[in-house]
Amino acid sequence: MKIPPASRRALGRLTRDVSFVALGVPLHLLMGVLLFVAFGFAWETVAGADGGWPIALGITVVLTVLCVPALTAAHRRRFRWLLGIEITRPGWRRPWRQFVYHGPAGLLLGGLETLLLAALSTGLAAVTVYVWVWAVPRQWRIDHPGHTTQALYVTLTGLAVLAAAPALAAALVRFEAHVAPGLLGPDPHEDLARRVADLTESRAGAVDAADAERRRIERDLHDGAQQRLVSLALNLGLARATLKDLPPEVLEVIDTAHREAKEAIEELDQLVRGLHPAVLDELGLDAALSGLAARAPLPVRLRVDLPRRVAPAVEAVAYFVVSEALTNIAKHAREATRAEVTVTRLGGILRVVIADDGTGGADPSKGSGLRGLAQRVRSVDGTFRMTSPVGGPTMMSVELPCPT
Image (cartoon, rainbow, N blue to C red; front, side, top):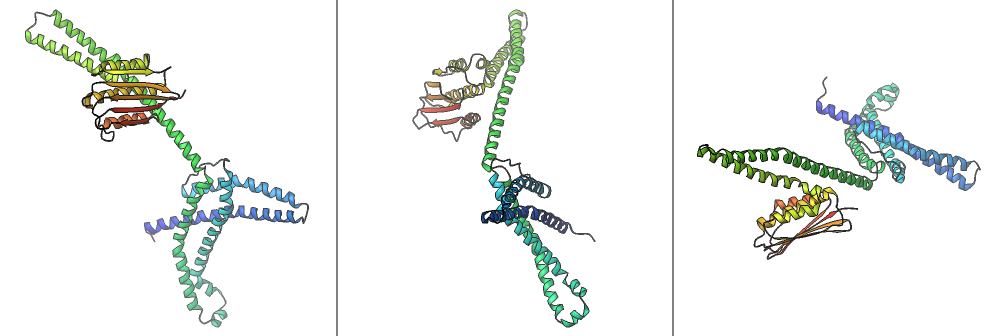
C-alpha cells in the first residue's frame, strides 16, 4: 500500500515533533528535580534537622550549576538535529537567562510536553480499546452488557485526540522554538551590536576595496591608454608638419585625426581625474581641491584648514563631494556667479561646506546626483545636509568622521 505524499509529509512532521517533545521531557524536568532536591536540603538546613544537610545542599547546588552548560548544550543539539535551528553558543555573560530557561520555563515546557505525550498515549489506548476489551476474561464481558457502546465512545474520543495531536505538537514546538533562542543564545542586544560592528567593518572594507580599484583603474588608464593616445597625437602632429607633399584630402584626414586624438586625451584626462586624481595621493586634499577650483567655470573661493592629512578614504569622499558639487553648480545653479568651498577639521570631524549665490530651489530628493553624494557620504558614516531655499543661497554641508 502506497502512502500519499501529503500524508507521508504529515506523518514525518508528526514524528519529528513527537521526537523533539519526547527528548525535551527529561532535559526540562531534570533541572526541576535538582531544584526540588536543593529546596528540600535548604529546608532541612534551616530547620536544623541534621548537621550533614549543609554539605548535601552545597553538593546539590554545585551539581545544579554544573548541569546548566550541559543542559544548554543538549538543548542546542536537540534544536539542531530535529528542527534545523542553530542556536549560537551563549557563553557566560548573562547566565541568569539560561537558569530561567532550565528552571521556571523548563518546568512549564516539561509539563506541557508531558501532558502532550500523555494525551497521545491515552489516545492510542482509547483507539485500541476493543483489543483491550477482548483481552479481558469472557465473564467480565458477560457481566457488562453495555461495554460495546462504551468502547465506541472511548474509541471516538481517542480518534479526536489523535486528530488534534499534530496541531498541538506543532504549536508546542513553535512555542519552544520561539522561546529558546532568546534564552539559550546570546543576548539579542549584544548580538545586534556584534552584527552592526561586523557590517560596519565589512562596509569599510568594501569602501577601501572600491577606492583601491579606482586607483588601479586610474593608474592603468594613465600609464596605458593615455600614453598610447599621447604617442598617437605626437605622430599625427609630426606627420602633419613634415609630410607637405601629400594630397590635400590626406592632410585634412591627418589634421582631423590629430585634433580628435587631442580631444580624446583631454577627455581621458578628465576621466582619470574623476576616478581618482593622482595629486590627491601625492600632495593631499588641499592641492587636489585647488586644482578643482582652478578648473571650475566660475570663480571659487577655497579655504582649507587641515593641520595634517586625514585617512585616504575620507580624503577621497571629500574630494568627490566638492567635485560633484562644483559640477552641479556650473550646470544647474541659475544665475550663480561664484562659489565658496570651506574645509576644516574640528576634533574628529572633517567638515566640508560648499555654497553658491544662485537662485536656489535645489531638491536633494529629486536629483540622482545629490542622492549619490549622500550615499557616498554615508558610506563612511558621514552626514549630508543641504539647504536651498527659493531665491538662494544654496549651501551643502558634509561632516566626515576622521578619528585621530
